[in-house]
Figure 1 (tube, one colour):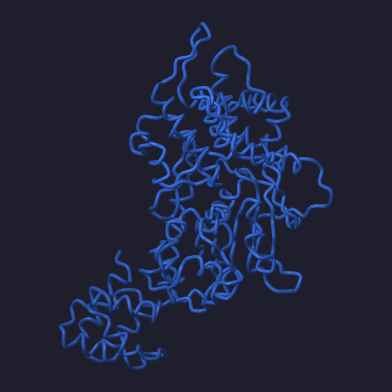
Figure 2 (cartoon, rainbow, N blue to C red; figure 1 turned 180 degrees about the vertical axis):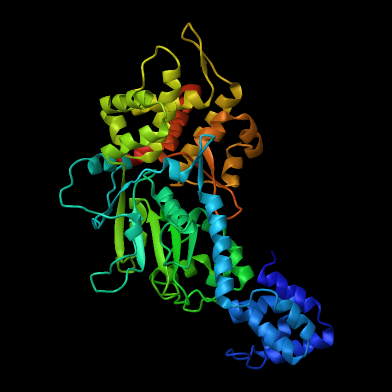
Length: 520
């Protein structure tokens, strides 16, 4: 079915030049309750497509009604009759657009692909432990240590909160909750949490008081950081359904913007010096848009949900966040629930759970859902073969993880036969992991991969290591971004790169860092 934008263009294409001139003349005057469009702006509309693109932001979901009204004045009753067959009631247009957006988001989020296995989100989703409140200090310890601390008994009472209740209640000052920040270490489940929130809305299971949810990731926004957009144009760019329906007044209904992965943001968010912007139709840089949206100057009626790793949380001033929450990952019972959902064979699930419990480091790391997934894949593969001791340390787990993914065939005499392509890819990924870790980058673009000699197309076809250890991030937009399946995998490969470089060439890549650390 045609969109309102397409129908309007088809209608104007049936106007001869003299009728189009009359049509524009009437647009200069008040139509329905709308003031006229300035003549100077209409003169800049060089053709019919420009005219439609001018009308949609101005009249929004009332554009078809306005067009019908003007066509009656020309008069072109034949076109009025044709256009009247298309839904023109604003509520109908809004409902249709919402349905199309929900379908798109369902298609995007209903399945999760990990290690070449696709599972429905509802089937594998296990509730994760979220708490309300925050400690004001920034924890500079490694995230694995933070997980260990979080797994121990808390120093003070915690207030659990479910994702359904994030925007319910009010602030201490009695105002509605507008901006929520959720922090948590890498792989703890922040992104899946936002996907579940969005999917529940798209399927009509929850959050139906919200008219539209617009999920963005900073990975996608990084690609657009050099472009100029108004807030309306940015939404239209990522969610074309709203553009085609002529939805531009986002202050007229409840909307939620989700911004996932603040720690991956590569453009500055300057809350002290950025110009104040209140006009949602004014074009500017993405960082100016986000800064003003977050501090409530731009579209103050919108609700925001921002996720981040702990180290980046202080990029946003405390006064801009109405509620701070923290994802703690899986509790001990939730870990068991995850493995029992993951395996139909409950005996196998029980064996894996028992083994995880025997290793303190593995048990602590399994607070992280992604590590549960890695552990399940490794242990499932190892249990298929008789003999061999199951990994008990993180190092052993990651070695076996790479072994499984690179299709290494261990011979009866203890030797190993490795696919040369997989070995080469592992070395390239190790270089990428190390160089980007030095820069603090956890996400990569095609140029980063090319710099390390990685041919994306060839690697995707021939290299199991590339497709399993490394992943292309799916989003609502077309640009591809990549990351390792977890930060700890990137760190392990970076360490492997340092080790192999020293073994092969005698160069210690850590020497400059060590000299700086000890003050030499």
